Amino acid sequence: MSEAPLVLVADDEPLVLEVAQAFLERDGFRVVTARDGVEALAQHAQHASELVAAIVDWQMPLLDGEAVVRELRRRDANFPLLVATGFGRLLELPKDLPGPAPLLLVKPFRGRGLGELVRQAIAAN
Image 1 (cartoon, one colour):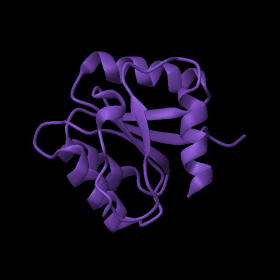
Image 2 (tube, one colour; image 1 turned 30 degrees about the vertical axis):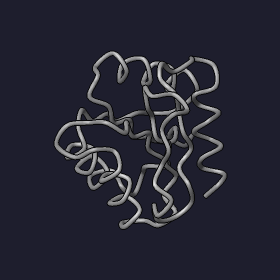
Image 3 (tube, one colour; image 1 turned 45 degrees about the vertical axis):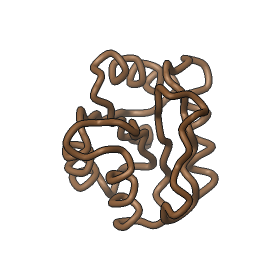
Image 4 (tube, rainbow, N blue to C red; image 1 turned 30 degrees about the horizontal axis):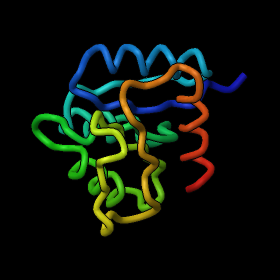
C-alpha cells in the first residue's frame, strides 16, 4: 500500500492551518504545516522528495507568499502551487512569477473541493 500524497500548507493563522489540514486529510492527503515563509521553505527542503504540492498564504511574516513562491519555483520550476488569500479575487498575482501560474484559493476554505483543487494544481504541472 502506498502512502497518501504529502501537501505543505503554509499560513500564519493557526485556525487556517487546522482547517486546511483536516479538509486535506479527509480528502486522502498527508499534510505538513508551516506558520511563516521561513518555516515553509524549511519544510519544503526537509520533505522535497515527498511533497506533491503546496498551499501558500500570500501574506505571512518573515517571508511573504511571493518570496516563498519564487523560491519554491527556483528549486523546482514546475512544483504545483496554490496561493491562499483573504483578499478574495482582488489579489492579482505578479505576471512574472516563474513556472505555471499558481491556482488562487480564497479564504476561508470550503471543505468540499480543497483536495480537488490540489489535484487540479498537480495535474496542471
